[in-house]
Length: 435
Figure (spheres, rainbow, N blue to C red):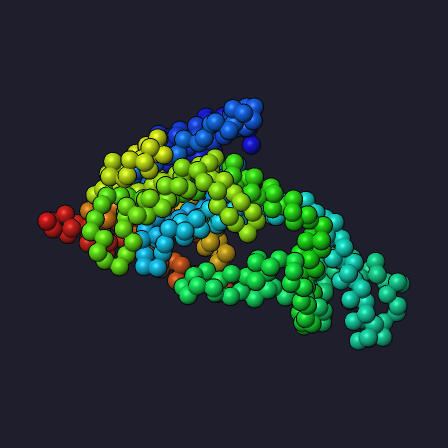
């Protein structure tokens, strides 16, 4: 997608409030990928992404900015916690797992796109396969007329969903069983290791028509898709478009006593360094280079500083941006000016139970005020505080909704907010006096 940095920021603004500096940084990084793709192969080899470090408290949008950025351009994206690599049992090679996960994500993205391209043809073949099964089943069950006389009617009724709940017996391909090669490690499918060397096993199952159609469509789609082409495209996308988000990088900053069982923080930094610098990692789809992947690191950096990272790693993150704590005005904007805001989410959820939920402007103002003050007087968890406040606020309505109640309109105003949040506001007032 050919978007200018301003257009990218405008798209991010639909979901994330504030943090303009961080949005500009990621927008420029994304646009630079497009610019690089337009260059000659010789120049393209020389230009690498300018990785970014985001500093800021939890819940202010660090992960969301990276996730939305990847979603905007359909780029492969994974998030890893840096602290994961300090746990007992991890060694340097495990850090390469983040790259393998990214390639797996790229493969799924490409496979989904190819599946969508062949969906019409695959569905058509699957429907005719199902019609034959249905005609045989109905003929055996009811002694109906031969299938050639009413296949068109069967197909029409199948598309209408008339047979969705009918149970049929058919052969369904079995997924290869997974096995755990390393205790505590990830389960690995035998099919992913040996690929086509293992024959695909099928077994007869009794299943309803709707579920069987899903299997048939998936099976026919696989026949129409060139897996080798998917693998090649997945590797290309992972290498050139992949985004790896390394969270809690501040937790591995600094040196410390390494006499304990855990891996040292500096050791983890040195393990991550080759991946960020540029190396080749072997995956089940083939070798992938990390030189042109975009790495975005993030952390609160309350205690440690970016300068506490080893110099080599610091040098690989030339762009540093600081995200600010959210204010009351930010909370108001989050509740009113974002796509699929929390207030909209609760409104559509409760509409299922015939409740027309409406928030007055003074109610929004009160929710934002209380959320901001709780963040100031206790842990600052950013926008996540709104989830807590909204759950408390709507607990009674959510609990009492449901059943055969007639449609009702519920208006949430400031008085309602203050009454139903009195417990947490009382706790908030007490905390002002605790040193």
